[in-house]
Image: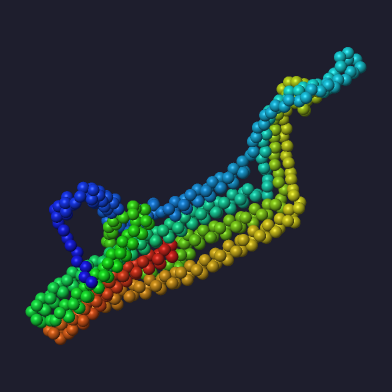
Length: 464
């Protein structure tokens, strides 16, 4: 089934609209305005082409994952401040009023004293105001090691953010290169379609002169249609890649991204594998973070051991009361008193039960150390895998470039033979298809080599 596209001039469309009934005319005009508005709001071009470095900076600034990591880091800092707050002295104030029931005053008469002395007067209204201070002097170094543990964890959290930042950077760079790869493939297919149209026109001219048959024309047209179908697939892939790239960069959906490929596919020079392995052990944030968590778990062992020690605290109070219970006999007036003391407390049961908490903390240290060793092995395997793959993709480029030259020469010779009626049209079209595939493969291989190099850099902690 053939589909014919009709292109109607603008004046003809206006005449058709004005010949319609009023109610339909208004609906069509409103619909056209809505389409134009939606098209304008959906397709927004980013000002000027953006390089891969600019894309990374834009994506990092708009990454929701990194914003969430920043919030988690702030929360860790708040918890660290809470630990420091626990070391501060506790200062408290109290004030109160109490109404007591009336009692019969207790009085005593002493020889030589004509007036009885009231020992317990009836004072129904009592007032008090006090200020106190409590400060821990020694608690088995619990607060010290708790603060030390949280210092390690805070630094580890920052390294986790750096790790996520590296992964986001790699995702953006991969999406950017994949988008460029599709755009370059589209350019090759577009050039192929232009060349095929010329070929079809040439074959039609030869048919009109009786040199070739209609079957040759139909074969060329079929080949052209297949390439156009392939182009539609490439166009769809470009639309999807551009949409995903807009999401990664924090741009509005439908924004048209123009890329800058200057120096993007420069020749990659690999160092020795041992260099990337050494960089991974020195630079990978996962390893640094895990090492800090091991130190934090070692501090937790010392925190658990704090139960074996007594606690010593200092206390002081100042009281102004009416009546003041420390003054005898009681009088209905304000009097102030103070006290200072030291308290020593030792839970002897914890000398037995605390050992289990200490052993639990030590087991956590052992687990963290094993995880660190496992990470070292994983880093070695990851570097070896990415290095081997990168080396293979780079080594394939010259071979694919040679296949492009061979395909070009094969097409040239086949076309010349066809012009001399020594080859079939199917042979020409097969040679053309092979040339198109070779050109696309060269673009894809160059992009894959660049992506594999980015991944190798990321696994070595060198991706900038």
